[in-house]
Each structure stands twice: as C-alpha cells, then as structure tokens.
Image (cartoon, rainbow, N blue to C red; front, top):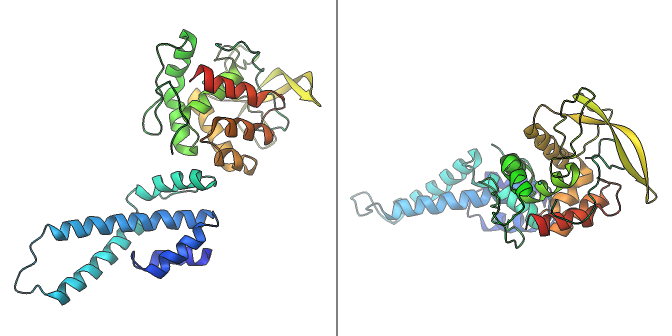
Length: 306
C-alpha cells in the first residue's frame, strides 16, 4: 500500500483507483501515506480553483465545444497536480494536522507558582540527554499562528512568564505540533516559573528551561548543577551536567528537536493534543524520574495556565 501512496503523486488528482489505494495506505498511519494524502488534497484544492476560474470565463467562442472543454478539463487536472507537486504550503499544514490526528509524529514537509505543590528541581532525568483542536480552556491561548497571551486573571508571575516566552513557545509549537501552552507549562515546572534556572559557576544563566542534560553527543556549552534524581522512588542528590544556551529561544528550539528526532518521544507527539496524554507520555518515555511528574505537569497546564 505504501508503494501505491508513493507513486500516487504522478497520477491525475481525480484518479479514483489511486484515491482508494491512498485511503488504504493512510489507514496504516504511515508518514509516507500522510504526506501523499496531503499532497493530493492540495491537488484537489487547486483543481477546484481551476474549475472556478474556468466557470467564470466565457466558453461560447467559435472554437469552444464539448471536445475542447473535455481537453481543457484534463489540462486543468494535470496543471493542478503539477502545481501541487511543487507545493503551495497547504500540504505542509495538513501534514502536521494529519500527523496528530492519526497518532504519528510530524513528518517533514517541503518548505510556562500558583499551585500549592512542590516543583521539581531542574533536570530530573532517568537517562542522560533525556529530553488540531486544543483542549478546552478558559485562558485565550491561540493555536499556531499567534503567540500565546496572558490572562489578566492569572497571577503576575504567570503573566510575566507567558509574555516573556510566549513567542518562543509558539515557534516550537509550529515545529512539533505540541501546543505552546503545554511547553510553557513544562518550562514552568522545570524552572519554577523561571525563578530556579540552572546557573553556571560564574553566575551566568544557562537559559536551560527544560532541564535537558548534556549527554555524550552534546557539543555545545555545558553547566554543572546539583539536582535530585529518583531511584526506585527514593530521591537522591547528585551533580549533573546540563546543556547551556545563548538564549531562551535556543532552549525551546533544542527541546523541539529532541521531541521530533528522538524515537523515545513519538508517543508524546502522538498524544500532544491531550494534557494528560502529553504529560503521561513524557513520564513513560523517561523524561523525568519524579514519580509525580505527570500529575504536577497536568495541574500546572490545566489549573494555572487554564
């Protein structure tokens, strides 16, 4: 079936047999099928545009007849397919939407202390180097296309956190499909709303909002900090190396890369539209060793960010 999906881009947009093959392949939730589906929807959309344009054009000339109209329609179909193969941007948006709808990580296109609960210290990890409709909410935090905005009813430190990092979270949301609010909630949990960031020996900020450790493959700047790891449910203090960035934007970008590129987090992306699914997915994937990590993150996103 996947082979049929891959070859479908060479066919006419209204090839009914090809559409059926594509439908069967898409049921397998394969990234290739999702991409082909988005491309064909783009082609069908372009064909509709072409038809609308033709309908607005007089077709009662001397050389107009049933045969000429048939060949014109065939030409429009092929032009639609050709334009879609080059891409007009619609398919890339659909790929991200379809990936989250059917439970696949996004495939490449062409083109944030209002809770009375203890917050974990940065970097509680079990493994070195670890790390579209939105759920109902009262806080007006938009989806892709605009940065989240603070709600005047929120505590001042929460509003400040959103205003400072909302744009960075939205950029990471467009890259991963994870709602910006979810990432702001995780950054708030990891950094204590920005009050407990990882600081270097010279006092310089690491800008590490997500407590991502510096594993053997990390080639960037590093900072050491004392953190708490849970071993068999028992907290233990230890010194670990963490990644350091030049800006908070870099921190969000690195987090987004980790979510996209590490197979451990495929199920996190697949459940990114549900607060509990997202939080529990992170814990199951080993992002943190704190046994209450998912519950704390869920409460922050649901009750504080709203």
